[in-house]
Length: 288
Ligand code: PPS
Image 1 (cartoon, rainbow, N blue to C red):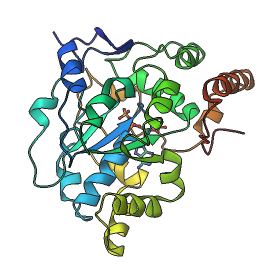
Image 2 (image 1 turned 180 degrees about the vertical axis):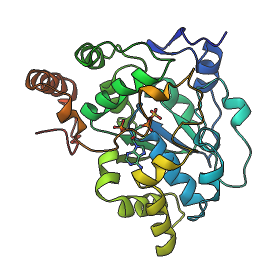
Image 3 (image 1 turned 90 degrees about the vertical axis):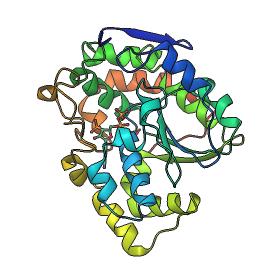
Image 4 (image 1 turned 120 degrees about the vertical axis):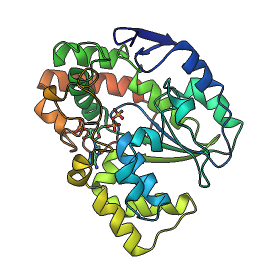
């Protein structure tokens, strides 16, 4: 069974059964991290693929070979996916691991190691829009219905992968407990070069100017959109229906403006204020 129609529930959130089983999720939650592991943590559609590409190239010192020959899910596999054990290889460098799991599931295992955690967030309006379009092409996700209906479920936190608010607040509450680097999609948009260099310095892997330039060039939206190792065109149409959209869709900040009505915008801000009242988080591109 390909489990395309199955929804797995774990720690109170639902996840696509095509990629997750109870066993793969239990394995993830008790995973023994190594001190040298580098873990990319994101809520879906927050720039995961972008970060996977940047880290690949930081560790290859700007050499494009791995980014152009190995799919992103093999270079930085998702910890919670069923294929993870087969993908994870011992390498001479740090292991790159990706996860969308919420903090309450993974932080206890991470706290037992000195693994480095990169938490990447994106303004939630654009996340909702990107996630909505992804539901239309990804056959392992439920039909999203209208954008209006989807937005209601996104704000309630009843979409697959759970609440965006809980994800961001949960992970950022761990800043003192974990070796955590926080960065946003909007940071990369505004200052790709500076962001890549900051990240490389934090990883203890500083870049030469020409290496940094090569990374910036390769990690532009237009370049990544054409890279079959990250644009998901290798995935067959039975799993991702490429006639219904592209994974590398628009890659912009503020796309929500083409999707939200003024009433939806007001409602969104009301919920955002309620959920984030204790938080100092501010996202570029969130307001009018
Ligand atoms: S997933 O399915 O969770 O792994 O998706 P994720 O990679 O987190 O997010 C996909 C969105 O990121 C955009 N993207 C980029 N934007 C700008 N520049 C670059 N290089 C880039 N790479 C990926 C991608 O287009 C998706 O956003 P939308 O808004 O749908 O275009």
